[in-house]
Image (cartoon, rainbow, N blue to C red):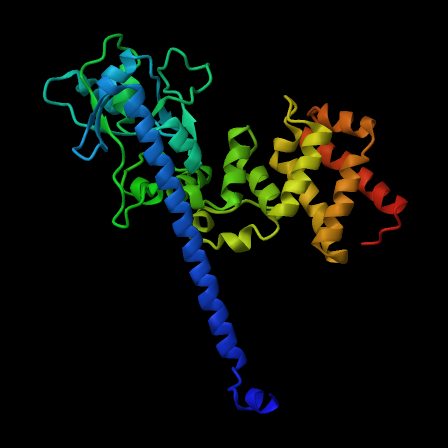
Length: 358
């Protein structure tokens, strides 16, 4: 037995690392294919649901697949139409484009998906600006307009729609419904890109494979958090992610501590709430929390530091919490500075009580 082991070639460390890299790559590809397969099956199920639920408004290919949708027929049957939540701006020129849908010969098929497809892909759905039911919740059986936003937004003011046809996105060359590829082919116009808009666009492009860090930032911004505050909570760094970082950066590096960031955010939300005072939604307050956390990290690492910060937030006296939330700006001091002052004093007291030296 010993001789058999002696005759077997010994792999170098580099060979082992190379094999590990190949295995990791294969696993990553396998997972991505599994996700795309799962998403494709879900989309096919949704298309079948629409076909069976509204047979008079759906035409099919000989094999039974959905070919096109009569959007007017769907609307008349009670289906609601929504747009993508990508911060588009529609001006007078786009109103002219929208109005063209009423003109003979100006018709073309619009690209649509279902609300449930959008939810599955992590895509934000919003009511159109001119929707008379703008304040009502989104219906799960609705249709989302991917390309043709301006025209359908204009139609919200029209009682009787003209004949309008639509179709679902096509599969990619590998046979998958891959919205990441589909949406990069569509020109999404905005009057001026903000970095937070680029995060939303990245989530649309990455679809089901979107990193949870981008999802967290997008979700917080949609709830009224300042973009920098959302970045600080997701990255535990005292600054925002730049446009260049959003477009081309290494997300695994940005969000290496996201699980700890989620814990800090939960502690803040539980202690301060997300009310009208908007305390934890401001970039200044979250920055002070992160700066204090960094001091703890430098002392004994991220795990220990997060435990201590959670303890600090959870045990912050009601008096200090109320003073921070109710802080007002005066002629001599901004409310953000007042909040920082109260927080710093409370943090110093916490360190002393727990014999923590930084």
